[in-house]
Length: 275
Ligand code: KIV
Image (cartoon, rainbow, N blue to C red):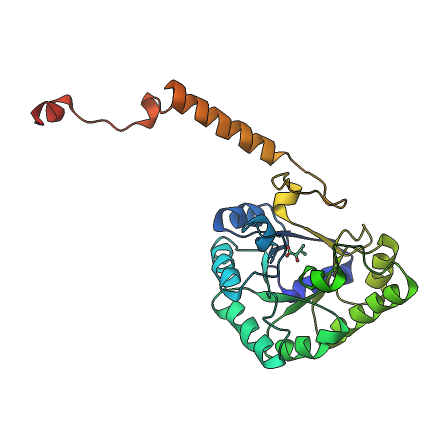
C-alpha cells in the first residue's frame, strides 16, 4: 500500500510507529522501498554524505531535483519526501511555492521538507495551499548551522524548550503533515509528540517520537567522518565494502579475476583469420 501524507497522520492516530530513511539514488531507494520502510527522504544531507561538503549550505535545487528523480524511479510504496535546500524558501513565500513545485514536478517527490518553526509558518501554509504536502523540521536545523554556531542539542533550557513546543504548534497550525525533531532531549520530544496531532519523526530525539529517521550511510556504517551519539550501526557495510574493494584489487593484480565464467567466447577460427 502506498504511504501518503494521509496514511502518516492515520498511523499516529492508530499509535503505529513510522520509519524513514534517506536515499539519494535509484538502487538504494529500491532496496529501502522493498524493505517496507514508510518513507524515503532525499535529504540535503546529500551535501555531506554524497557530495562531501562539510555542511548542507551549498546544496542546490538542481542537486536535489537530480537525486530526487533518481530515487523516485526506485520508489513504489514509500512516501517520497524531498528536502528544500538552503535559500530555496527563505527569501520569499513566492520562491518557496515555486521551488516546492519544482521538486514535485521535476523531482517527482510526494512531499517536501523544510527547516524552521514559527518563522516559516506562512511559508508552510502557502505551500500546503498549493496542494503540496509539507514535512516540517525543527530542533537542530542544519541549514542554520552558521547561526547556531555548531551542531548542538536544541531545546535544553526553559526558553529553548518553550520555543521548540511553539515551533511544533506553529507547523501543525500551518498544515504540515509531519515534523522532524532533530537533536532534542528525549523527554521534550515525547512531550511535543503528545501535544500535537501530526506525527513527530525523531533523529536524536528518543523513543517517544511517533517515528524515526536516519541517514542510511550512518545506519549502515558507511560514513565514518564522524558518528553522532544518536546513530546506531545496524550493519558494518563500510567494512564489508572495504574488504570487497581489497579483494577485487588483489584478484585483478594476481590474475584470478576475471575467471572463465566471467568472459565471453569467440571461435578460434575467427581469430585465425585476423591479420
Ligand atoms: O537531510 C537530512 O538527511 C535530514 C535528516 C537528517 C532528517 O534532514
